[in-house]
Length: 468
Ligand SMILES: Cc1cc2nc3c(=O)[nH]c(=O)nc-3n(C[C@H](O)[C@H](O)[C@H](O)COP(=O)(O)OP(=O)(O)OC[C@H]3O[C@@H](n4cnc5c(N)ncnc54)[C@H](O)[C@@H]3O)c2cc1C
Image (cartoon, rainbow, N blue to C red; front, side):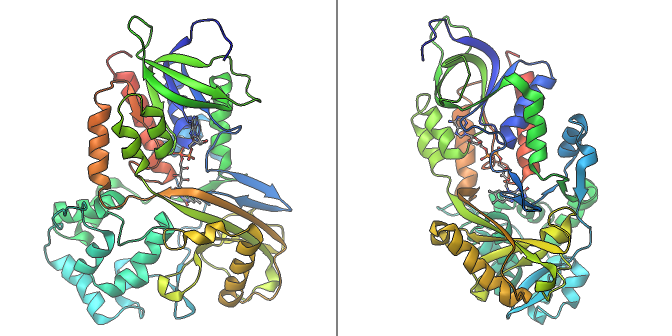
C-alpha cells in the first residue's frame, strides 16, 4: 500500500471473478461503463474449472449446464458458440434402487407406468392433477421444507426414491432443511397459482417455451470464463482481494471507498478505489465480511448461509473394463442405498472428447449435507471408496487409468428454512446503500444460468440507477 496518489475512481467495480462477477463486469463494459473486476485468487472462473490430462478432460466443478438464453447470447458475443456441445436429449437418468440401476421416470406417462412406484404414490399424483391445494403456512423456522411438501402432496415413497436423490443432485442438501419456496420456487409458484403442482408446471412450461439443453464446450466449461476474462483484459485484476467496503468520506468522488490486499504476484496499482457502484460477487460469508463497516448485521446475515461441501471424484477406465454400457446421463443414489456416492455423471456418454479412444470417464460426487466428513478424507481414499462403490454398480473389473479429485469445502449454498426471510431482510438492508448490490449463487438459484441471469440483471440496475 505505497501509492501516495489519491485512490482512482471507477463508475462501477465488481468483486469476485467467478462466472457471476465475470458476466456482470463484461455486461457493464459492453454497455459503455468502465467497470473493473477484482479477484482474490490468481485465476478467474471460481468453481468452474476444466483440466485436460492423460487424454481425459476433467471438470472440477459443474460437469455441464443448461443453455439459457443469456448463456447462448454471451457465447455468441464471445464467439465461442461454435464450441458448444449439447448432450443427447433423450438419454435416460438412473436411480440406484435395491442395488440395481433403474431408469428414473421423468414424465407423467413414464411415472404412471413405472414399476418403481406403488399405486398410492401414483394416485397422489393424479390427485394433484385433479384436485386443489394451497401452500403450507410459514412457521417460526421459515417456509415449508422440501421434505414436508413432498410428504404432504405425494407421500414418503416419492421423497425417498425420487425427490431426495434429485435434491442431492442439485444442492447436495437435506430435504428436511431446504426451504421449498427458496430452493424450488417454481414448485411453490405452481401450487400457489394453480392449486396443483403438475398443472402449474405444465402451464409455466407452455409459457416459458422449450426446455433448455444441457451443454458444455469442446474444451470444457472453463471456456466460458476464459472467454469473458480475455474480453475484460486489463479491467480484470487477479490476486487482489477486497478487504472492506466503506462509505466514501464527504466530498470524495464516488459513493464507496473499497480497500484491497494484493498478492505478491499482483501487478495492480491501487490499494483502494472509489466507486459509485459496487457489485459483490463472492460467496455469501466473504460478502458479509466486506460489508461489516456499512451495517453490522450484514456479516451475521450473510455468514448464516450454509454451504454443503462436495468432493468431485473423476475416474477414467478402459471401456472393456466395464460391463455396464453407460448409455445414459448417469445415476443418483437415494440415502437408502447406503452409498457414499451421491450421484455419478457419465461424462463420456454425454459429450465427445472427454476420454481417450477406448476409454470412458465417470464423475461421482461425495459429501454433501449428510456426509461432511467425507470431504476431509485424503484424495487417494476418496478415489478408492468411489472406485469400490462403482465397481459393484457398473461391473468394473480393472483399476482406473486416469483420475482427478477436487474437494470444495463450500460447494453449494443451502437455501435452508428461513432463507426467504433472510433474502428479504438483506434486500431491505441493501436499500439503505444505493449503488451496492450482491451477485452470486446464494440468492436466485445456484445453477450457472441462474447466477449469470442475476449478474446481467445487476448490470441493468447499474445502468438504470440514479447515478449511471
Ligand atoms: C461441485 C459443483 C458442481 C456443480 N454442478 C453444477 C451443475 O451441474 N450445473 C450448474 O448449472 N451449476 C452447477 N454448480 C453451481 C455453479 O457452478 C456455481 O453456483 C457457480 O459457478 C458460482 O459462480 P459464482 O461466480 O457465483 O461463485 P464462485 O465461483 O464461488 O466465485 C466467487 C469468486 O469470488 C472470489 N472472492 C472471494 N472473496 C473475494 C474477495 N474478498 N475479493 C475478491 N474476490 C473474492 C473467489 O476467489 C471466487 O473466484 C456446481 C457447483 C459445484 C461447486
